[in-house]
Amino acid sequence: MRRVWSGPALLLAAGVGVAVGLIVQGSLGTAVVLLLVFVLLAAMNSPLVFPRSVGALEAQRRSAVDGRPVVFWRPGCAYCMRLRIRLGRKATRLYWVDIWRDEAGAEVVRAANDGNETVPTLLVAGRPYTNPDPSWVREQVSSSR
Image 1 (cartoon, rainbow, N blue to C red):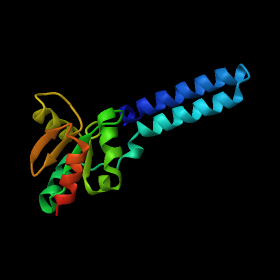
Image 2 (image 1 turned 120 degrees about the horizontal axis):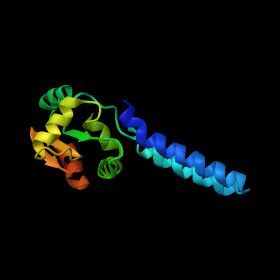
Image 3 (image 1 turned 45 degrees about the vertical axis):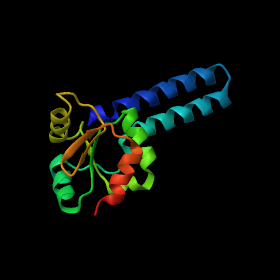
């Protein structure tokens, strides 16, 4: 759990530190703007931006029933963020597995990527795809049952 929030917490701490330094120097407006930027970056790198994660085994079971793809991701991953943003509302139609919270999910990703935890990795009809194009993923979501 700590690992998931360490990046966002560091961003918040850095933002507070920069803001305090600017306030001491008398730049209140700049401090507020930079603090907001750091808060936004922390939020974007947190699990809050992604749909609720499920376990890998549960996600695969559900995917076998309804055909929806499974996305294996981790907080702080720029490619995962890109995929999430480009999917928009369709992101909720996929099953998201945070590999930092689910060891079975991390094992699936390592098995698909020669031992590496390369994310995002998608399972579509049981077949893994590593860092696929977001437009292709949208097509897979549209074609799922």
